[in-house]
Image 1 (spheres, one colour):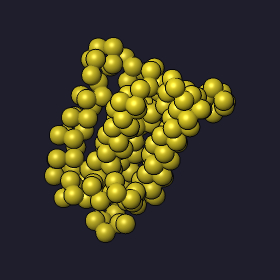
Image 2 (cartoon, rainbow, N blue to C red; image 1 turned 90 degrees about the vertical axis):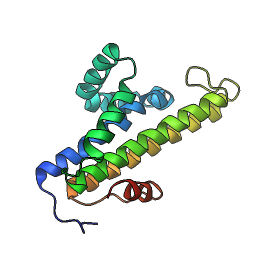
Image 3 (cartoon, helix red, strand yellow; image 1 turned 45 degrees about the vertical axis):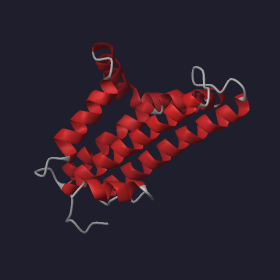
Image 4 (cartoon, helix red, strand yellow; image 1 turned 60 degrees about the horizontal axis):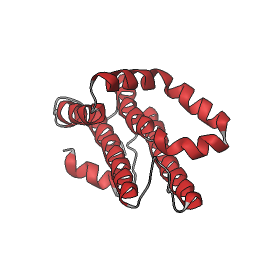
Length: 167
């Protein structure tokens, strides 16, 4: 959907950047998959290496870096009417993907995961973790591709919540 006007190449790049956050936060769910396919893990971590290094460095300084980045993106980008709608929309969508990932983490902790592994049912735990990781990667990759094309990424349920937040 391009009904809010066209987007410049610079806007497209800035709209892609927030999707790095859910891709980094999904890494703990990838352990089982990367153990089975180490080449995939090497490619994934190599592509995210510069961002992961900055995120890890900032995490060593600020213990709650994810929360700090969330509030910074939400307050400085999503709520800023002077920033183009395309960038604010994609930023809010990446925030909601990260929130969904955090909620999955909380639910799995309530179910009794220990160190990102369902201790009582290891095969089911690996399948759940792989599914969560692949869903986040698929949603983020789809959104990045749509940003590069200059289009709004429509993810069911998530996009409706984004439209409610971004005017």
